[in-house]
Length: 246
Length: 233
Image 1 (spheres, chains in turn yellow, orange):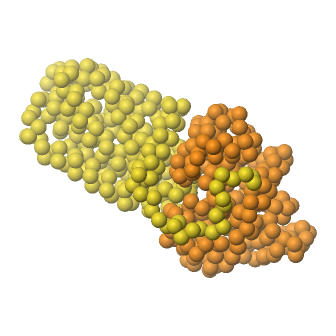
Image 2 (cartoon, rainbow over the protein chains, first blue to last red; image 1 turned 90 degrees about the vertical axis):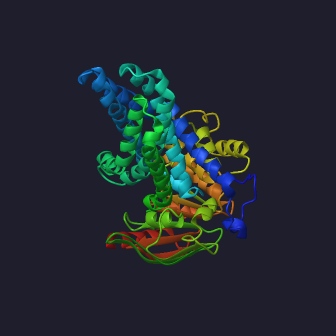
Image 3 (cartoon, rainbow over the protein chains, first blue to last red; image 1 turned 120 degrees about the vertical axis):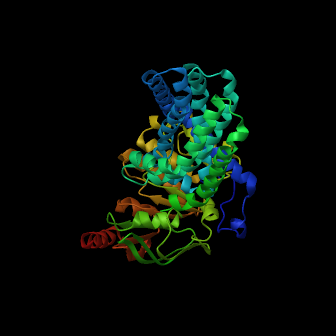
């Protein structure tokens, strides 16, 4: 390979340790997101599994519960978040498992990319995939549980906030679980206790939306949800490097 | 270029590297041999900044890998027995992804050049899972060379290759080595390793057991030393 576009450096120049800036950081985050999207477009493994599983949960709960009107309003928010949480778990468990099992995680770690950029790239990808599934199951949920279509915009807002929090901590735990032997079991065992506050807040807010309760009366749950997202994004950003290093 | 001083690495109570001292000069092609479990891959991973040492230090051109890991990775390429390629993506997609991670300049031209040099131009839009093992390893070399690294680390790159593919890999590595690149290669194939490198190092029980310049030794001498340390291990 004697033809070179650039001369081979004989030694590492002094400028080697100059940081490349925020724009470069964002480019790498987007490169990782783009790679995950391209892989998912080809395989459709994650989204199809999440979609079918969440649909099954909604249908099974819809058929098994006594569906009188007063029961619907009580049960519906919980059913929605059970579907999102368990389907999201499927997606999260594949997030790093595929990288690890196919031996490509080292490729990411070898690159001159801050570890936090890998975290954000994977997290944004997880948010996108889970959100795409939610985009389809929310209308189905609204129809099956006889909810007003007008609730959809606010529902989407709560679902997005909940998904961000779920994916932020789930991406970190997925990276942790991938190093364990019983990784499919470890991830839900580690994740579910931590996301209890998020699920509580999300279910209460969903219930308020479906009941047309003024949001001012449930603002504390909204504050909890936003605080959960902010805290766990920050914590995961700081801890991710230690999780992936050997 | 690489200074390794009293390097130790332990995984829990299992000590893998027990005080490795090694200097690799610019332009050296070092063949690193040793028994399975001697610590060759661990040593390469530490140099590649994939793993942190438990003790001692590794510096590349004066930069400590523990302090400057992210930036040093711009100057290191790694080819291992794992290809580090995404099977479901095409060769072109894989290389474009890594080109973005490494900020490789002129990526399209660079990718075309590399794919032609490794003999995969024309198959760049096929998913990597449709490639043979030999083709995947050639693509892995292209991936490692995207950013034109002055330091190339090769961890048993001929694993799983048939004779023809291994010979082709040899040709590529000979061409790479001719660019005055610094190369550290681990292998179990003594003849191949000695034909490529200008230095030979044997790692045994986590330490450097033997070092020699290629021109000062014969294949038979190295083979005798190698089996001496492998059987003792």
